[in-house]
Image 1 (cartoon, rainbow, N blue to C red):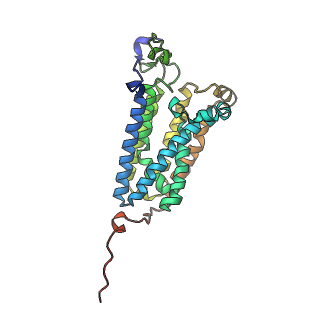
Image 2: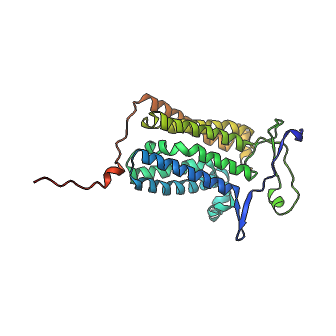
Image 3: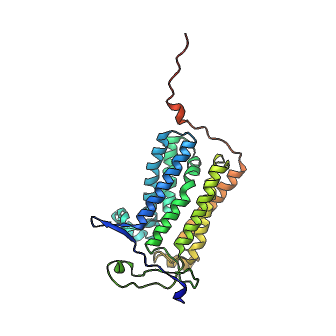
Length: 298
């Protein structure tokens, strides 16, 4: 392959070091994605005049759900034998290993608990609002993967192929870099798809009545994210060795099999959301919660 037509990606994953601890670009992009998501959902709650405690509780539920779900998803979906034999290794989130499918499952469980205990609304009511910034946060995470030289694709002769550092940890410790063949920058492919989801869901919430069609915004976001994820897996490198046997026997990898149920669910949500009429949810209003009681006239 002609490496002159490719991009040599030699960005250091470390943003800076403080007190002997690495602060990586990946962490920065995670924080940016989280801050933007929090601000958008907060604006949504304010627009609908929802109780402030609803938003505060949602933040806690979502953070725990995403981190725990993504970590357990990686451990149990991709390397179950190792982590079930070494369960305490699951706690080492800082060593990497987060699965987006597990993160989504974690979010669903968190939203289910949040809806039962806090809002008393349906899960879909909450998910339709949480989905609005999800594409942006997912895109930031993939840009973080790009900075980490991870989750990239197989060889390509396209001019946008990236030559990633193959001996990353040795290179970060002073060794000469060993570059991969020009490869599909699947992190960028996914990030662009997720930004499209973000644009669509933002438009749907702020410019249409979609938020009053239960599950419609969630369905659109879910089906685009996981349908794209299904197809991009064809050019993505295998993440763990256990996937080879699955690909040989079924033709699909773990990520693709995990995407199929979400695509089906997303399609069902869209059909159901369009079939039923738009209904404005009956929710308590923050502006009415602390109104002083009027004195009765004698």
